[in-house]
Image 1 (cartoon, rainbow, N blue to C red):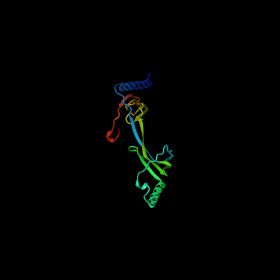
Image 2 (image 1 turned 180 degrees about the horizontal axis):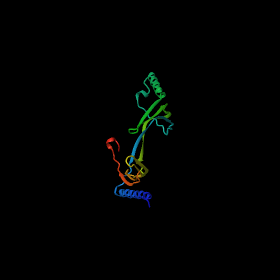
Image 3 (image 1 turned 90 degrees about the horizontal axis):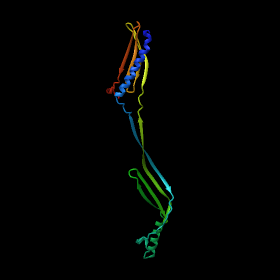
Image 4 (image 1 turned 120 degrees about the horizontal axis):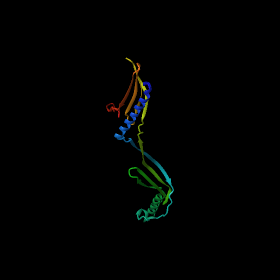
Length: 206
């Protein structure tokens, strides 16, 4: 068998050696955990609105007011004046308001209108508050993949040299190289190499 016919076998042997070495290194080193990124965003929904609803009175209770201006006067003029004042108050639409605080989120104001001693119109709800909505986004970094490259180099000068070969990169960014050097004069050489990634933190790379 000629030397040229032995070249594929040397390549196969080199690849087998790379795989064995790669698995041996993996067994001796712990696999890094996948980087998980958790991002939390808070969006505030602002509500400013007024809603009207009909309220049905369940019970009506009249309260006697013991004040001088609501009693008959000693004279006709006094009685007439007090009656006119009472009639004006009776015909005036009075708004009663109550404010409900929603902690630090805002308020809801409730307003009722009374006319002729009865509820008039619809109850008014004035909303002014904001509600937080929290979203959590979890991102998992994709697992690194093994990569295989085929190619070669050409060296010019002297006898000249061609080096076809294979490059294998594992999941930890380690690079293994196997190639065959074929000189223009017919000489054959075999090569094997290993490379490790260098983190250049000073340049801002991580």
